[in-house]
Image (cartoon, rainbow over all chains, first blue to last red; front, side, top):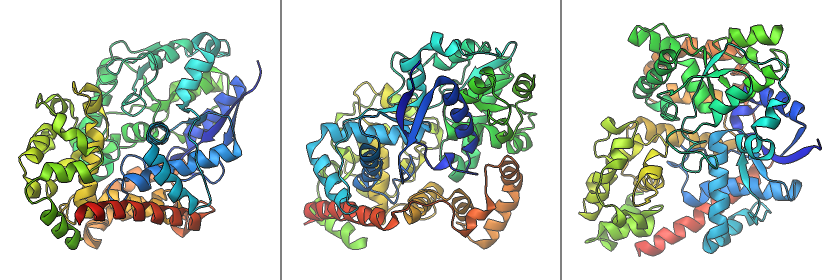
Length: 299
Length: 208
């Protein structure tokens, strides 16, 4: 199979020793097997995520993403932009679509970009990594590379919000998207049926500013996974991953629960199933160890 | 920005809806709300809103300027986009809430001690400094945003979370020395200043 190339927007949380650096580790291992070449956008900047709106107005925020798109057009012409982070994808895609549709916004954005010596056309697609996997490969092709099926591992597919709404993955519903379950199955694992909190919110950035309100939501997300008999939760979003994993100690203290539920990325599952080592799959980046995956990876 | 606030009150004395339509992101959609309440029922923070979204929309139309802009309500938006995909009229509610929150902040009317209003500003200041988020500094600023004593208390409470992240190599204490950065920070700042200038000029035009 020939090499597939994409213009890659990794985002702040994926940087070295940042909160989702383990996500990038597993994505790199997964891409290695699938013969995907990710060409990083040079000098990319933060997209302002979903919480930049207090200080940043509409145009400054959109201009941030426009800068990334402009740099991508320069360095990686003709390549779709691919993001692994849900918020990066959402912000960049929103900007690309709006620039495409709104002539005045395009004019103002380019006026601002000119101050940095840049110009944007915004005619290239902006895609989440999951879309690349499903649309450019498909489940059957993804399954062909499985060396160590995740037999006997029961996994709750927590899709969360921003890879699901407002854009979502083509062909999936907002209320019950199936792609994580299908990916789990493709890797030889067992998806939790009817996972109640599949598309519920973890509080997002408000887990920082409103910890108690958010942790009440997170508690329900973990509880529903236990109810479904899950060994672990899988997610496509760095904020979902962190929120659902790292506050379990605090939630246990407050609610008297005994949660110890690993939360991994789809790329973690794939790297392990593809025969990569624990380290290559980013399993050393788990705050709550995913022991069942470590056992398979170390086999 | 009290001057801007005064100018806006003068300009739109009798019509807050027009003010919102002209100055708030996606504000022109507000009149389309049919008060069904699906947004409020779909919101993960629904019970915590002083005035849930459909109420905010009605209050805008009823001219309740002060009550809307000083409300903590919009700051309850977690950006889950549930309301957007469920709204039968297709209102971009999440964007309108972000827009209202930003407009309230710009006019100096946002509640001063609202934690998300503070955190969101910290986030913006953090990312615009070097073009990329410094997670360590953001966390520390968050813990200490309500003063030193409170900061020490929060830091102690968060100690185990931080240690867990550090052991998993997902938190770098050295980021305190500066951390990740874009190369062209001056270009980035010039670009943002220009964008802000364009936006301010538009609002000022409506204000006059």
